[in-house]
Image 1: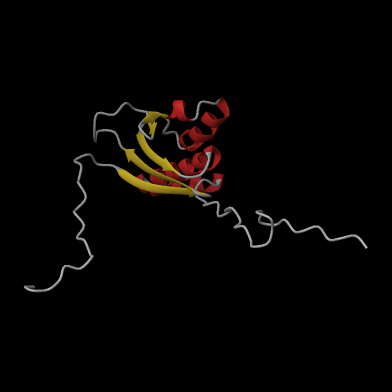
Image 2: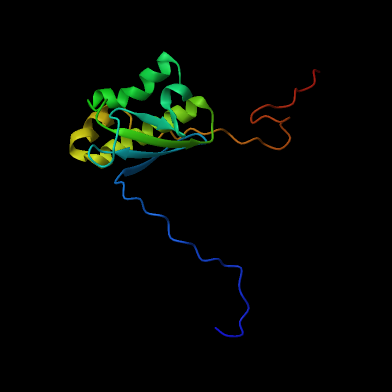
Length: 155
């Protein structure tokens, strides 16, 4: 419109589209958010079974044996350990909550890929359930903690 002032609203540019076909899923746990991309075979030059977290191999981010057992479990029970490549961006939270978010994101991506094949198996093991427990907020007058109370004076 001629003569009108420019408002503070900015037009968003369209997101860049890749020719790579992938399946997108999100997993959350506490403050952690994991955005998972599952690349099925034949969509790009994948190294089957590769999992990248924040552009690093997952073994560099979660090096322990116990952590490896945790993040490979949804792939083992669905027998897809070396069939897909996963590219995961994770932010927020600590290591434990990031790992929980990754598991939920991987499980949701597998269900989005083939629901009738993987959903019942993952549901039985509890991998499709979002763990809703979050950190309790601190209250005023509690000395910096959520549940701490002042000590009552003795009589």
